[in-house]
Image 1 (cartoon, rainbow, N blue to C red):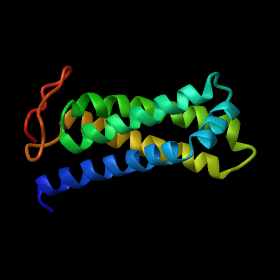
Image 2: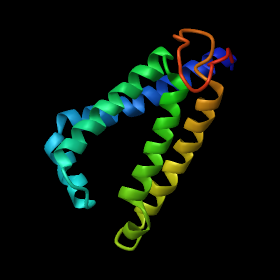
Image 3: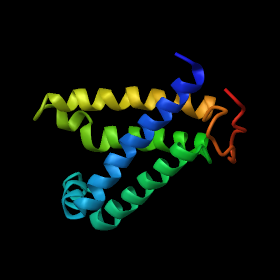
Image 4: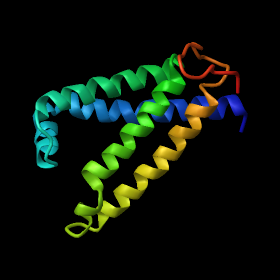
Length: 137
């Protein structure tokens, strides 16, 4: 597979995952807030809105390539936070599938870190950022 095609497909997959997550939040904000509250977080409606708009910003970064490395790094931190907050060890006893969800987050985390380091590629990318220069891949 051509390197450029692989990078663009990866960017689309990242964008699609976060677009689905954001759409679920926007379409079911009350349910998202209940889920957040059940995990013990305060101001769940506010946090649900913040999460939805954060995920939307990630979608834009992954699609455009603008601030790509920063977005991928922030997304990686976010994904690990979600793993521990919503699927961590305290959830495993009640539902063994939660362990699988927890581990899946680390796979996604690894891909996001790889993307953060390597940037958005040289095609179809607005090459802007703060922490790394997105050199052509």
